[in-house]
Length: 146
Image (cartoon, rainbow, N blue to C red; front, side, top):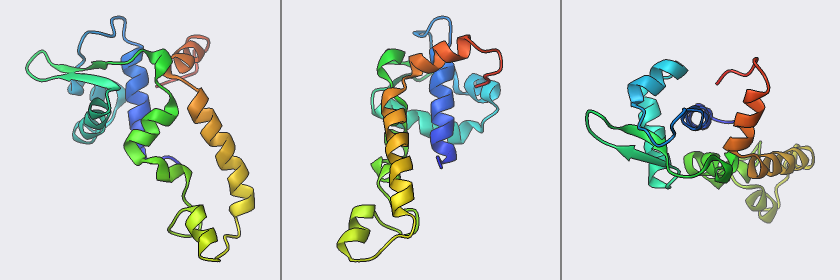
């Protein structure tokens, strides 16, 4: 359901939130290596999060990324919205437009009734689950890997 961009963004924010000192900059090469993600692609994603004031970035030899916001204030919805836009939560599964546009055009989506219930639950989950919640959950399980 989520693109690689959103999944990588979520993983990177969790990674930065789990650092012992969240205010110290972590370089893109370290994040990329530790999460086994491609550095150039990850850097573009993290810059989007910087532009939307979720992360802080410092350039230079001692630069890198750190959290700008408290993990209790960062929801999964916010991260996905920054990276993908809200369309991911509004688009029709079958047609190449929002569900509202499909309805306004008098067209029908054979999955709309089923998917709208799932989408509502997904949006609720993403709006209500914070990075802090995920860190707490990860701390309670040794099976969770970022």
